[in-house]
Figure (cartoon, rainbow, N blue to C red):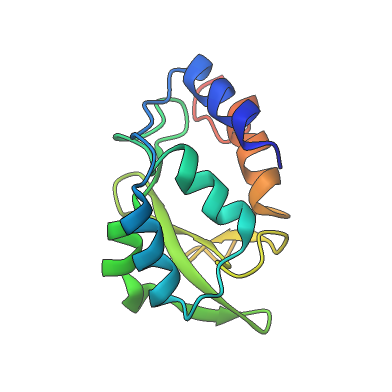
Length: 136
């Protein structure tokens, strides 16, 4: 996943991105996961610490690190891997779930139990392409 291209494409789409996570926030994140966070996930947060609000077309929000940590009760095992809530759809109507230790595993909605993408990279490609947008 090329996160720099992803960041530029999200900005071009009009998605408001938070500034990059601080080194202290990244370290706290790593500590909460016993040091086992996928390098692509860390790269995302080193480029932007979630969205400022929702992506306008899809109404998806990716949370900052501090919210991912504070919502740790929304973790669950899915397909033999632990997943964490990292964002929401329609202001907490459902939660975006991905595996923090393996960005190549599917991304899905917690309550709907529907796969959104085959990987975190695929999720961002689909988001940028407008595949999750409500009105086309």
